[in-house]
Length: 356
Ligand code: F0G
Image 1 (cartoon, helix red, strand yellow):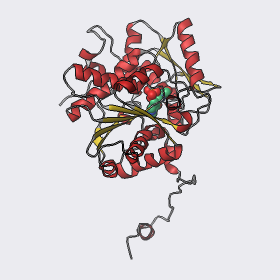
Image 2 (spheres, rainbow, N blue to C red):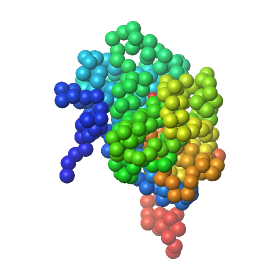
Image 3 (cartoon, protein in one colour):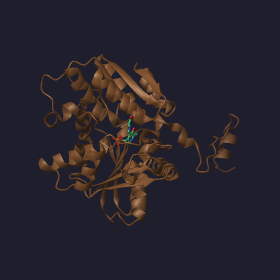
């Protein structure tokens, strides 16, 4: 038995590193790919879930951040900067501090989940709330990186995409080939781009025989790729993907065309319904943005786009504990209040319906 060494060491021959590269890792990657019988029953497909919430900071961003911060340190950077809806900032903060450098993170004021805000502060980042949305934050971060000695670690940095492509390698290793269909949330479309690259490289390496159709989903109030134009004031409860002008727009269109893929939009109530299905029927708790993969699968199955028996992989990108409040709301918006009883067996047995 041995310890998983993080994605750079595990896939060193497939990434731009040398023996001299100062690898910055927190042991990311190697996440579970889990069968989801409840989703297979609902769709007639063979559905698997890649649970990226199991990464060290609780999201898939760690795969890209190990690579981006490693290359930043290799190049002599002392400060990394990013714009973020929360997960990138949590990850950048953790990897920068592990490397002994500084992280500056720009987030939209009041629009990121409490767990993610806490992570950036816990890992000692310089956190600045911007009175604007994510797209404003990214514009400022790009400008700063062009004009000041700060190294940009958003997914416009190709090192991020390189690190994130390793998730596709892991899927192929477990399934023995690429799946038929792959469902994934889309914000900046960096991860959509990264999986497509990973699968393509696996075909070139002889590890896979096919390219999955890549199905990407945006929240309906924040769906520029579906509408075909930027959304000026994106809105959704899935704060991680509240993005109106995706950074990887052109790469994403290329990836979609190459894979005979698809971009769809999902309403917030369907996202929350899917989150509940995944947590209550499969046992996997994800944040709302991640549940859009499940919602997208159910919607496409309904539309007759998911062939019976098809091998399907859903990437769920971030852990439910990042933004747990949504689990405590019913579909009608009311709060779920746990039952309170006196501290004796009889009362508990009665509430549990265990008989007299
Ligand atoms: N899911 C989660 C949980 C995310 O945090 C993000 C992006 C995405 C999906 C979309 O990935 O941008 O590659 O298409 N979060 C970024 C952030 C924007 O700042 O944490 P993408």
